[in-house]
Amino acid sequence: MKISKKIEQAAKEDRVWWSFEYFPPRTAQGLQNLLDRIERMRALGPEFIDITWNAGGRTSELTAELVKTCQKLIGIETCMHLTCTGMPKEKVDIALREAKQAGCRNVLALRGDPPVGKEWEPVENGFRYGVDLVRYIRAQYGDYFDISVAGYPQTQRLPPEEREREMQYLKEKVDAGANFIFTQMFYDVDMFVEWVKAARAAGITVPIVPGIMPIQTWNGFQKATTLAKITVPQAFLDELEPHKNNDEKVREVGTKLVADLCRRILAADIGIKGLHFYTMNLEKGCRLLLEELNLVPRIEVIKPLPWRQPTKQSLTPNRRTENIRPIFWANRTRSYLSRTENWDEYPNGRFGDSRSPAYGELDGYGVWIKQSKEDALRLWDTPTSVDEIRQLFAKFCKGELSALPWSDTAPSSETSVIAPQLAKLNELGFLTINSQPAVDGARSDDRIHGWGPANGYVYQKAYLEFFVSPELLDLLIPHIERDINITYYVINNRGDLRTNTHSDGPNAVTWGVFPGKEIIQPTIVEAISFMAWKDEAYELGRQWAKVYEPESPTRKLIDGLMDSYYLVNVVHNDYKKPEAIFEPFYKAGAEYAAKYGSSALQPLSSAEGANTNGHAN
Image 1 (tube, rainbow, N blue to C red):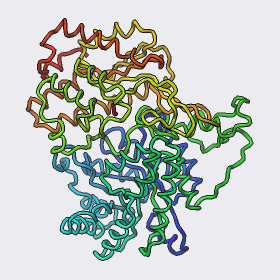
Image 2: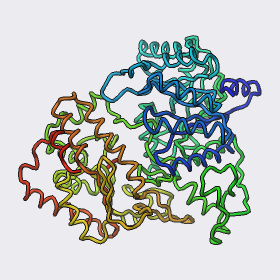
Image 3: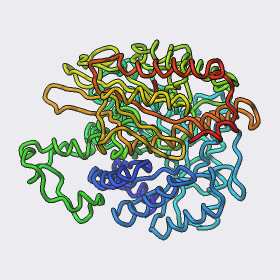
């Protein structure tokens, strides 16, 4: 059924409706669990769902597969995103044909983001703007598909001339055949209402569906609003910031703030009765928000077994055949489920569980550095030697640089604890892109290390992740292997992995103990998630290189590093020895300096890199 017809029917019945957005996960297990989660979240009553699209490669193929599965097997109305980015007409035709064969009647047509540091350039035989894609779909398929387009309430804060131009672009897409509009996330209701009224004044009459982002954690909220460059009312910050180290409290307060935002939208005299939730593949935040809005009943379902019983429709193979579990959970209905369904309740950066549907990118829309070309040049200048690269990384660790390609924001307060050590490591040639200090039982309300519910205690193993040259790595590994408490993973850009760990399971590097709760382990290190992250880590470096002209010394330097350097993560498993993780690096760095001398600081060309064997600090 077309979404516009669903919206029309809801309007006739004078009822509020809602929908969910998901993105394709980065791992196979994450995909299986997302399908199970979508099936489970169907019980929350969404009118439809939509699946995002990252053009090219595996992710776009996953979008198509997810649409087919949700539409045909799960049986929920599904809208497929489709972008112009990297999509010639032939690929667009394939995507639309497969969507139609699966029974999908709804498409969100987007231009997509241009490559970082470049103006938009369509692929050969492709499309330049979203409006071109709308026209093409309408010309090829008539009225078979409902076509939605994106709207941006934040443009209401642009200067008048730019604001009017953006509104005209939106009207052109509607006039070309768009049936309704999804908006970007926002938290400023007054701005949104102004924008809707401006759209109506411009002659746009199709339904407008507001995009709502639940607030899961303080860091997630900060990153999402920064990346999207949206206005956050000071009232939101005043309510949330005092609890920024307590994810549970942030979610509680954030749920009430966003619920109030939704109520104001629905109460405004602008004809809107629907809400589109950006789930980020997480379940609990949306459920709590709907409960707060009294849109779903607050009922704790009593189950005959301490887990959701498997059904024929369950899409995760091990769930489908499951019929017995240990007796230990007989009186703890939520306990076992929390280990298998809600382990991502407190998403904590990219080193969560790779089984999680939410594992992967923050925004779910692809891998790009977030700086414009101008911002990148201002931040990172034009380094032409490895030593200049090292100094950039060291400056970031010292708090003298606000961002790196691998970290969109300034170093966390936790980094200050080990900032001198990190700076030294970078100066020695270990280009750190992620780290955490060892923590032995800090209170959960600790200003620097605290997180989670009140009156708890948190623990961490020391962790380092870095890029390193093959020569320096060869000197480091023997020192690491002399310490039985250190485990490591090494991978190159081709995906060749080596490790000294003999366990296939995850290694918990952050955990918390809280009153009345099981031990929470929100941050782990494991091979499968590291391999998934590897692609993104190297791609961010390549995106940085593309800021510079193709034949420039800086472009060649950074490309050479990405071609030849290894990506390594190291965990020191004795959290009572906070300095022990750094000792092997100091020793290897001293050996390297003695062996190579000043040559260690010479520029590296991409040709030299090609001949070599081979998120936030």
